[in-house]
Image (cartoon, rainbow, N blue to C red; front, side, top):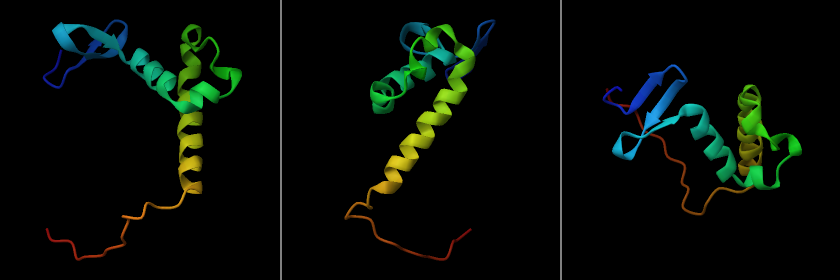
Length: 89
Protein backbone atom coordinates (compact mmCIF):
# COMPACT_ATOMS: atom_id res chain seq x y z
CA UNK A 1 0.00 0.00 0.00
CA UNK A 2 1.19 3.50 -0.72
CA UNK A 3 0.69 6.52 1.52
CA UNK A 4 -2.04 7.75 -0.83
CA UNK A 5 -4.26 4.75 -0.12
CA UNK A 6 -3.80 3.15 -3.55
CA UNK A 7 -2.50 -0.38 -3.91
CA UNK A 8 -1.47 -2.69 -6.67
CA UNK A 9 -2.03 -6.39 -6.22
CA UNK A 10 -2.20 -9.41 -8.46
CA UNK A 11 -5.82 -8.47 -9.16
CA UNK A 12 -4.84 -5.00 -10.36
CA UNK A 13 -4.92 -1.57 -8.74
CA UNK A 14 -7.18 -0.92 -5.80
CA UNK A 15 -8.23 1.54 -3.12
CA UNK A 16 -7.73 0.95 0.59
CA UNK A 17 -10.66 2.01 2.76
CA UNK A 18 -11.50 1.74 6.47
CA UNK A 19 -9.72 -0.93 8.49
CA UNK A 20 -7.37 -1.64 5.60
CA UNK A 21 -10.04 -3.28 3.46
CA UNK A 22 -9.13 -3.11 -0.21
CA UNK A 23 -11.59 -2.53 -3.04
CA UNK A 24 -10.33 -3.42 -6.54
CA UNK A 25 -10.41 -0.35 -8.79
CA UNK A 26 -12.67 -2.16 -11.25
CA UNK A 27 -15.30 -2.38 -8.50
CA UNK A 28 -14.99 1.34 -7.74
CA UNK A 29 -15.85 2.07 -11.38
CA UNK A 30 -18.79 -0.33 -11.17
CA UNK A 31 -20.03 1.50 -8.05
CA UNK A 32 -19.82 4.80 -9.93
CA UNK A 33 -21.70 3.29 -12.84
CA UNK A 34 -24.44 1.87 -10.59
CA UNK A 35 -24.82 5.20 -8.76
CA UNK A 36 -25.36 7.14 -11.97
CA UNK A 37 -28.80 8.08 -13.21
CA UNK A 38 -27.65 7.06 -16.67
CA UNK A 39 -27.24 3.47 -15.49
CA UNK A 40 -30.72 3.43 -13.99
CA UNK A 41 -32.36 4.49 -17.24
CA UNK A 42 -29.53 3.62 -19.60
CA UNK A 43 -29.12 1.05 -22.31
CA UNK A 44 -29.48 -2.64 -21.78
CA UNK A 45 -25.75 -2.87 -22.52
CA UNK A 46 -25.23 -2.45 -18.77
CA UNK A 47 -26.97 -5.74 -18.01
CA UNK A 48 -24.43 -8.21 -16.63
CA UNK A 49 -21.48 -5.81 -16.80
CA UNK A 50 -19.95 -7.58 -13.80
CA UNK A 51 -19.39 -10.63 -15.99
CA UNK A 52 -17.69 -8.66 -18.78
CA UNK A 53 -15.14 -6.28 -17.24
CA UNK A 54 -13.57 -5.66 -20.66
CA UNK A 55 -16.73 -3.68 -21.58
CA UNK A 56 -16.32 -1.34 -18.61
CA UNK A 57 -14.13 1.34 -20.29
CA UNK A 58 -16.55 1.64 -23.21
CA UNK A 59 -19.54 1.95 -20.90
CA UNK A 60 -17.79 4.52 -18.71
CA UNK A 61 -16.99 6.56 -21.82
CA UNK A 62 -20.64 6.35 -22.81
CA UNK A 63 -21.64 7.50 -19.32
CA UNK A 64 -19.25 10.47 -19.48
CA UNK A 65 -20.44 11.41 -22.95
CA UNK A 66 -24.12 11.24 -22.02
CA UNK A 67 -23.58 13.19 -18.79
CA UNK A 68 -21.62 15.90 -20.59
CA UNK A 69 -24.23 16.16 -23.33
CA UNK A 70 -26.98 16.44 -20.71
CA UNK A 71 -25.09 19.16 -18.83
CA UNK A 72 -24.47 21.18 -22.00
CA UNK A 73 -28.22 21.29 -22.63
CA UNK A 74 -28.88 23.03 -19.30
CA UNK A 75 -28.20 26.73 -18.76
CA UNK A 76 -25.51 27.95 -16.42
CA UNK A 77 -26.51 28.53 -12.81
CA UNK A 78 -27.57 32.07 -11.86
CA UNK A 79 -24.49 32.48 -9.67
CA UNK A 80 -22.13 31.93 -12.61
CA UNK A 81 -20.19 35.07 -13.53
CA UNK A 82 -17.57 35.46 -16.23
CA UNK A 83 -14.32 36.90 -14.90
CA UNK A 84 -10.88 37.48 -16.31
CA UNK A 85 -7.59 38.33 -14.59
CA UNK A 86 -3.91 38.32 -15.26
CA UNK A 87 -2.22 35.24 -13.87
CA UNK A 88 0.45 35.86 -11.27
CA UNK A 89 3.27 33.38 -11.10
